[in-house]
Image 1 (cartoon, one colour):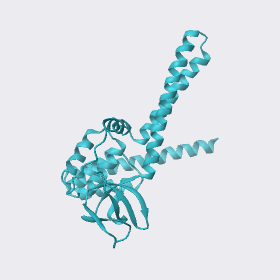
Image 2 (tube, helix red, strand yellow):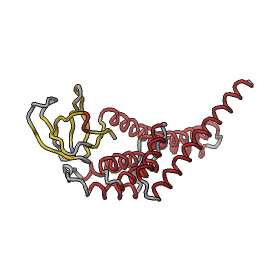
Image 3 (tube, one colour):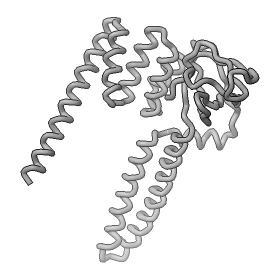
Length: 251
C-alpha cells in the first residue's frame, strides 16, 4: 500500500514539474513575442510542443509569431491546428481569415445545399474530444435518471424518470455517433497545408504524368490517398490530383 501511495505521489510530482516547466517556457515565449523577438518566441513555443503539450492557445500564439515573421504557410498551419481544438474561437477564425486573404490562391468551395451546409456547421461545432466529453456527460445524466426510475417508489417520478432518461439515452447515442464519425473521418481524411511556393498537381503519382493545375504555398487541401512518396489530394473547389509528400504539412 505504501509503495502504491509513493508511486502516486511521484506521478503527481512529475506531472507538476512538467506543467510548471511548460508554463515557464510559454511565459518566456510570450515575453519574447511582446518584445518583438519572434524567432525566439517560436523556438520556445516549439520546445513545449515537442514535449507533447498541445492547446489552442499555444497553437494560436505560435501562429501569430509565424505571421509576424511573414511565414504564411506555417501561420495557417498552426491557426488550423488551434481551430481544431477550439472550432468556435472568434479570434482564431478572424486571424485565419486574415492570413488566408494574403496567400495567392483563393479557392472557392463547391456550393452546398442549405441542409448540408447547416449539418456541417452543426457537425463542426465541436472537436472530436469535445463531442466525446458531451457523450460521457449525457450518458451520466442518463444513468442518473435510470437510478431515479429504479429507486423511486412513486409512480409519477418513475414515469418522468423513464421518459427523460430515454431522451438522454437517445442524445448520448447521437453524440457518440457524431464523435465516432469525426474520429473515423480524421483518420481517413487528413487535411494539409502546402509549403512549396508553387506546386504542379499531377494526374498520377509520377513526376512525368500530365499536369492538371497549379497551387501555391498556404493552400489547404485534403489528403485522400498515398502511394510511395506521393499524396492524392482534393481541394475545396473539387480539383483532384497528386503531389509529392514533401510539399505539404499535415494539420
